[in-house]
Length: 252
View (cartoon, rainbow, N blue to C red):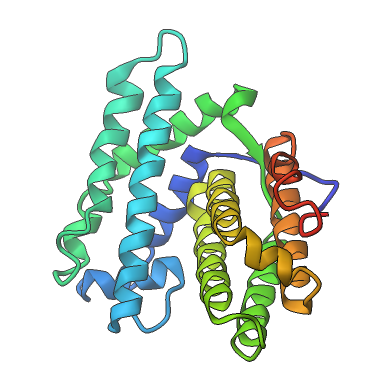
């Protein structure tokens, strides 16, 4: 991780995503295609592309809720000036009109409400509990490369079929979490680790029997890397310490 830490909060992440939406060149194209451009999703016309767009919009909706909740925790916050604009902007995260024109979405992004969101971001930036250190984009890209590599290795491995299937599911969860970091921040990494540990715990016997395999060892190192990113962002105790008794050889 970098020594020069950049602090970011959920409102800043919203500003980044919504600004990218406003800057889409063709607002008359299908919304699913435009959102795919905003989120960096390939092949938006395929089923998997559409599901990825929907997944990101659901994540975006959660961030709007996080911003509102955080603002309400600020003493004497003015609801009309700070919270109402966020509620109006949240209409942009609908998944119900993805085959319609993108202009139906961007009409919710008024200049006045976007300006109010910037003031909300400033408000949140004054409180350390609402801010986290931004994980360097290179670290996230390296994890995604690792995921792709490990998927190929597991597909061609001699691991038991049931374990292979579970580990591939785990890796798809990791990919989703890392991609959603841009939207949700460190909470996306936390959710990824929680789901990954659940999958490993459900397959504890098979994991134990195959713990010396290169694939399982590589997976363990990758999870440790994600845990370090999460710990860096929130300055919290590593999540994997809680799993040390369950999977001690894998997570060290």
